[in-house]
Image 1: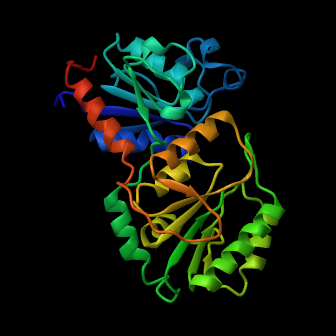
Image 2: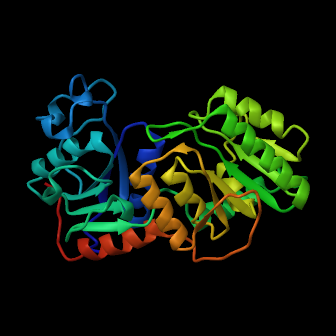
Image 3: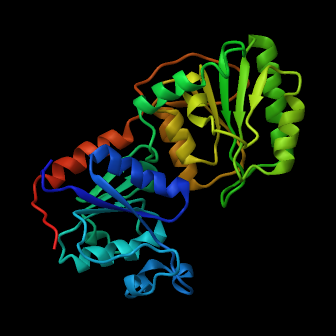
Length: 325
């Protein structure tokens, strides 16, 4: 990579699922990172990015300072960061290397690189297709998490099954009935195989679903994170022998597949063409299988979308020289 390319503004929204994609890529590129928070004012936060004129002048309270010297690189994920990223590149005289994660929905030619998952169906000279979503998980972080959390879960029997439960979104519905069915299947799986269960929920899961899961697993050797204390998510991924993830989250499925362990997808009500394409790709590439209440053993090369994207972007950046203004 060109040694002059050092500074990177990572545009953040306070949404971990978005922000971590940008941070993960910036870290993999080895850049000097400065996080820049964006808080759009009304009505800009409700309008498509193409209608957000002069965005650097209309940022709301809580936003970072956006002024020169401009960075060598800017990375943003999600619709709300598009207009600001374009404004930064323009203000820098075109010198800032503009990396976009996810479909920007317009101004495709204004970005140096756009990283989108294959299921989005985008193609072009500046588009890199990942298999899943980007994130901040690395082999080093998993190794450290395994060492840190191993004593906490040492009393649970093997195999350890990690269960990542999401919830309802625009495409899927997580109901109490599905939660009860899942809990019963996990209890039966534990009884049949002697497995210990590690389970975590999300803010979208809902109290009712979480309650029925706890009820169904009350007599099963398990650890269900209640949201207090240190988040054991990385510990779950690193220590589990198998991982179950609900179908509503591309990010959670992608993160689970960085481990090289069997990853099962728990079906929910609903779906969409994009989600269906994603899950079909993950199954056909050998990363995931549907959860049918049984454990199988298979192997695959751990998913490394972040590393693959960083290597190709680094190659492209090295072809040009950037300097701050």
